[in-house]
Image 1 (cartoon, rainbow, N blue to C red):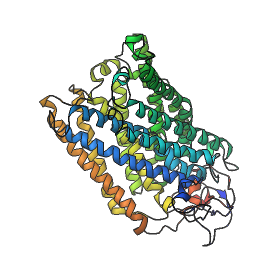
Image 2 (cartoon, rainbow, N blue to C red):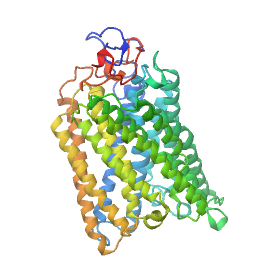
Image 3 (tube, rainbow, N blue to C red):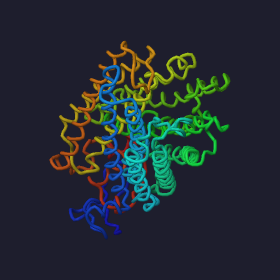
Image 4 (cartoon, rainbow, N blue to C red):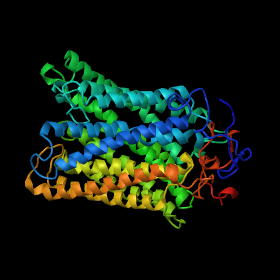
Length: 557
């Protein structure tokens, strides 16, 4: 691989080489050993791998969204509408498995994180390029295994995405293959985390100290620790489920002396930190987008950076707040309730600092900024509702109701989803070298935001009134809210499809982006390289002399 990549003397307070001439080749057009699709699936370039993750994730997201659409159609009226109860159980299980393990968990980290992290720290690639490619192959393999589980064995799994024992041990559906798929996906996540940790520690540009890292990198770094530490727990747990189903060893089966509550502990020891694996990269992306589109230095940089580490730490020790009604001791309930309140503090630190960053900023309401503002609003609703169910007296009444469904989606889709879409629009010109069409992107944002709230806000009301989640049927008094919720799903899906269509057509019809920084407010290193970047990002590794959001650097002004 030749050292031909380009950089430019713009922003980020760095000393670069000269601006490249037109003969320099971007990473799309580099001619290597392979050609065609093989030049992608065998490439070790972090940018190509990031885009391959992006394509796979958005494909799986579309499948999961379609399953969610079918769920809402079924729930428009009591009784059977378009499917029977067994099919409904399989559909909402697959919706959860695909959305959680194939879109939300890899999320920003595997896709945009892979593309941007080396550039943002002044490196030419990740530390282990071949392992990075292997991680993508594992992700592809796990995704295909999950889809194959639909059509083999005793039918699609019907346990819900949590695979709760003892039902997951006894059901005749194809739980084993689905659990094996999640196990393979877990390996992909672990290897990505190890790669990012090593890259941040060993490949930062000269002068790039930890407290000169962009906040998106801080978020990816904190997420990587969670991926490495927490993911093996769920991997071992799912192996035990597969062994239990195959050999009946009795770890979780109460008939054989096993403990199904043990499964819940092992599952949530991973799956609550997994919530932060999902959301932390989004929190980092929001910080970077705010700095660019509010034309302001980030308020409280150190506090936001350390709050990412604090979220990763405290988020790992609150798993049993999912189990307040499982029969654990009252002392344990009190302890985990308190820890739940504590973990809200670093999240609140971020929100307060974001609002302070907006104060007196020169706010540009471009599409990424619209998604950013929507994220803050939705994340606050999700956070406040999370504190409500962290209170024992409230959780006992709303546990396993639609209140939990609403809270979860406001955090995960209202959080990660809107951050992901905002970040995709924010870095789109850098990734593809073209601008998307502005008017359709803003209409898509409006439809998605309105549809999301019409879809999920009624679920808070239904849950408070006692509507249980995961149920195929319901009492007639809940129908009006289900109808409103289903209409909201149509609005939201219309917005998402419009967004996808606009981004896809802009790949050919969008205005070519010849500026290094099309937004005019970028201060981090990715805005110092051409759009799209060259193969190895920089012709000469930059020397960093100032912080990522320092307003006193002449280039930044």
